[in-house]
Image (cartoon, rainbow, N blue to C red; front, top):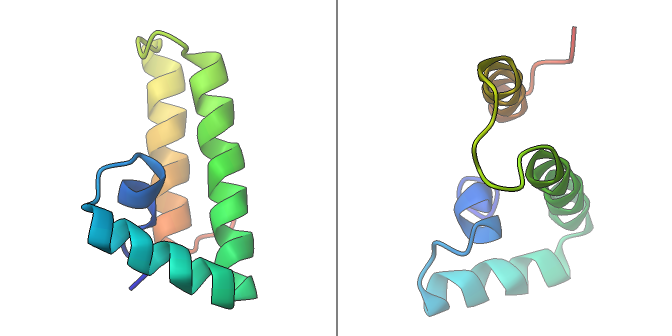
Length: 77
């Protein structure tokens, strides 16, 4: 459940109850906590490359591909 809604959690899009539930899970689950930390770092890198949210098409395509890979657990090429 926590990983299914991880991007919503990291983007602050969840209700307070759902957010608290995921925070409790991450506090108790090292594997999910590590995964969340990697995704936070990924999102921070995206935000650093596109601080205004206006990314060039090639960057947007690479980001979309990386998100798809991560969701489907596909190793990077």
